[in-house]
Image 1: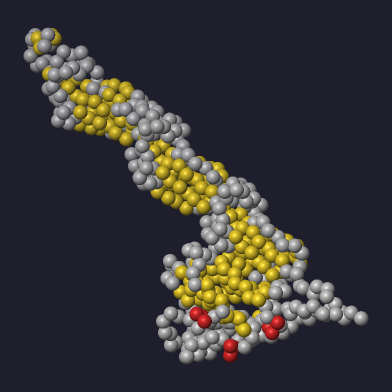
Image 2: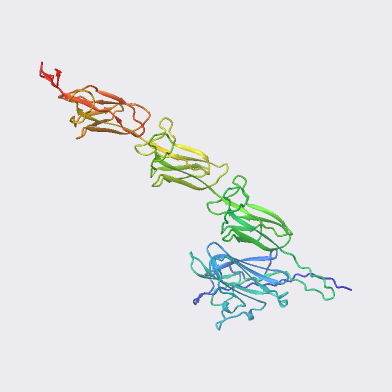
Length: 494
């Protein structure tokens, strides 16, 4: 008569991780670290995850432990601050078998699994051990050591776990209880009932077109936390990949964290969690993150048409203010450009308002463009500035033709006034200037009377300055000979 197979669940894997400095450290374990010496933990859904500590108190990532019918697995996953240089792992059912030095300190170099060099940039590593028959139903201790590299923190020693040995050097170890697998009954050679486990995996990626679907060429995003509701968590690797292994059949909700400056996509119906049902491993459980921007420039609008044309120069130091779905302000750069970055796209609306510039006017003059409203992303949101001017010379009009001719003397100290109320005095070269005027309208310039002189012809002129070209208004004068009766001066009867 065949004996029926019985499936029993013994609880006994202890995972032990001890951190060993390359130099002597006489201080006891820091009391601020999360120490849990209450015993073994039952594997949640066939896997248990622990913090990988660097330099005694820096969170460097995670170490996960699970088993199948023939092997025990230890998986390292570092966060965005660290990469893996070396790993050393020991597994045993008795601490008396742990390799130690003559001071009783664990010796990682003597562990049965020693990987002395990983490729540069390595962030995940999985080490497997044959699951020994003597381990069934026993509490296993697993020392999980790593040499970690970091540009932020420097090179560090790492250990994983939530228990610790009471020795002079800081250390951690893990203690968990996995299910036991019953061997084949020789009188019934059927396969044993092996608990099936499954994997959920996917990518966190930069969703360049924000459609929520991972397309070819869209890069992965590292350092994003992905978690199972009520269970384990993992950080996406350098390629954006993550995975949860050793899962029992059932329904799981996978939640994606965020990344500073990014937003879940699609923006208006973002996917931040996905529910999957096992039994069968699931791949492609992906999460997209992205952002949009608004950019443009402030520029000197030479022709005052409101459009940035070839050859027109940027204006630096102009304040641009953002309001709406996000707020902020920036100053235009040396080339006049500005950028509001890392904005949420979709139906979110934003307004960009351009500040005033001393001596300049927003263009076009008749309907100045001072603000823009729309959604990100948008480029070419440009703001033009310009001004006009009126200039001329005061001269001695020898032939009284009301036109300045070459060789005619230029007169200084003559007053000129504008219909806006502004006034000027001709300089040593006879010139004057009214600058920083708004365009789009005419101006009347008048020359003041001057004792001893008479106006040659025109006393005032009306001009229409445009296209950043000064409007000319010259004024001629002749000597006043009216006090000499009956005489001729320059061919004119007085």
